Length: 124
Ligand code: HEM
Image (cartoon, rainbow, N blue to C red; front, top):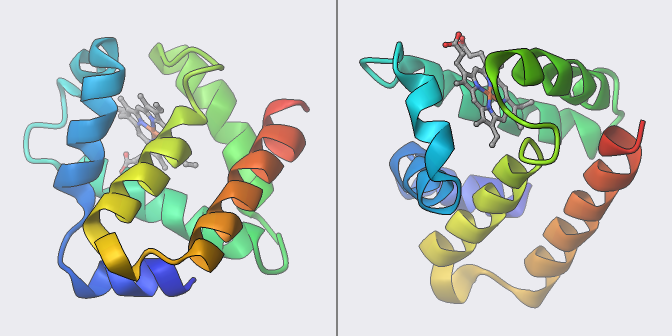
């Protein structure tokens, strides 16, 4: 939560996150062809952050949303194994943005989160 607050203080994280996503998974960029103004990209990032915040709290809907979106995204052309890469890309992009402010504690928490998503969302 702290890392997300800090990232939020540094402006819109979307351009850096998507630049990193498309550098790592070039084939994914074309899927956003209809998103001419970046609104869908911005909304997707906001939804992913909302899902994370709920998932690490009570998990009232976060894990379920992620599971549903795996299927929706497969229909869009996002392979199941690529889907969680978005969360990894978020972590790496936020770490770069925060630099010195990215602490060992934050890194550990993100490592735990990514492992939990892999275990509880992707294996189900
Ligand atoms: C590499 C991974 C991912 C790729 C390539 C991807 C790609 C896309 C694309 C192309 C769209 C637009 C669909 C359209 O044109 O209607 C979209 C929408 C969306 N994605 Fe993703 N996605 C990824 C991961 C995720 C993750 C992890 C979440 C979070 C749970 C998520 C949540 C959403 C949501 C909520 C929308 C709808 C946004 C809106 O229409 O306003 N996506 N995604």
